[in-house]
Amino acid sequence: MVDASGDQRIGFPHLHVRRCGSTNDLARALAARGAPHGTLVTADEQTAGRGRQGRSWTAPPGSSLLASFLLRPQRPPSGLFALAVALATAEACEELVPGLEVGVKWPNDLVVAGRKLAGILIEGRPQESWLVVGIGVNVTLRPEQLAPELVDRATSLALEAERLGRRVPVPSELATALCTTLARWTEPSGLERVTAVWPSRDVLAGHTVRWSSGSGIAEGIDEQGRLRVRVGEQEITLAAGEVHLGTGEAPAETH
Image 1 (tube, rainbow, N blue to C red):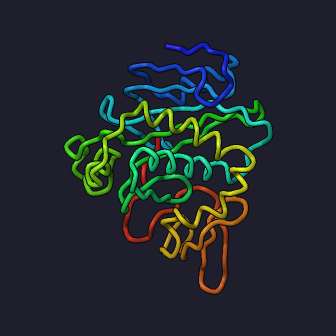
Image 2: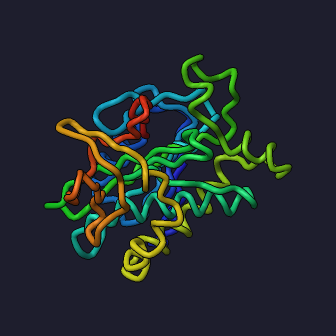
């Protein structure tokens, strides 16, 4: 259903469907039809979810928050925008599960103790001044619902809440929290804080990372949100792409 309140805050109007191919695709279609800034699309299940680098993204029905936010920024987003979305998502998760400590694997995978909790996929048409921010968070996912090879590589808010002795949240609660944290982090004052806050959540710093043409030691981000990497006596910067821990870990999938 659509909440036709006319409110332009993030999260309004809100379209929820039981099943769709991809919430990002639905949001893109709404953008093309002139849907307003802040429009939120959620689904219980996706049949054609995708992540960065064209990977597929699947989750059992009702086990995850599958959300896409349509944003119409007043100015072209900087390289810090995707990192701000990751910080907003981490903050929302921690608000629902007190005591939870969420790290971010540059550019925008969320992890808890090395296990993936969430992924983000941002798509858009800068020439048309809109972006679709797709966020997938494992909320009630159980180990038995995972493929065997992912049991030790993924987690959920439910699993972490039980570990901490906290109440298990539901996807709709996380969507509500995200509306607030996204608004806070994607406004100009929020973007200005990204480089200062990033080190407290950065799980790549000090680790070996590798990419298509080399490897080095991650040393945080620069003022444009690029990854700083020490290669011998030199420092280089990398834009978002196939960068992952150099310990044999496969690149994580994202929403």
